[in-house]
Length: 106
Image 1: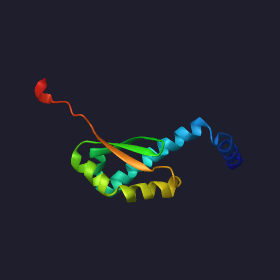
Image 2: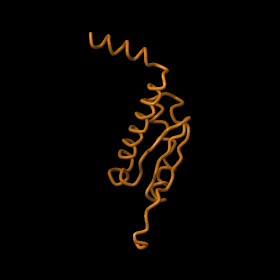
Image 3: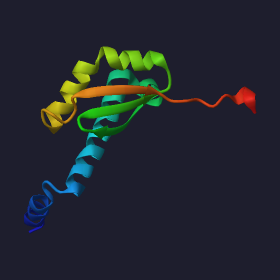
């Protein structure tokens, strides 16, 4: 009975805005899991996937070193995401550097 209800709900929500938002959130979550898989916990503290829109996955990085590491493995990264979510889930990755507040200015 619960499986039938789940199937009905899935069919009703397919293609809706809610379903798209849920898939985007799942892609971001999976991307963060991949960051931890590829670069360990240290990498997970230095980079975080923050959004996906129109096939562009944005990853916020603490420094340029991790941003460069992500750029070097971007094809494998995109491939793994698309294997799980479909061929056009992520087409490009954009890394941005997170602004760190200067503590000496305080």
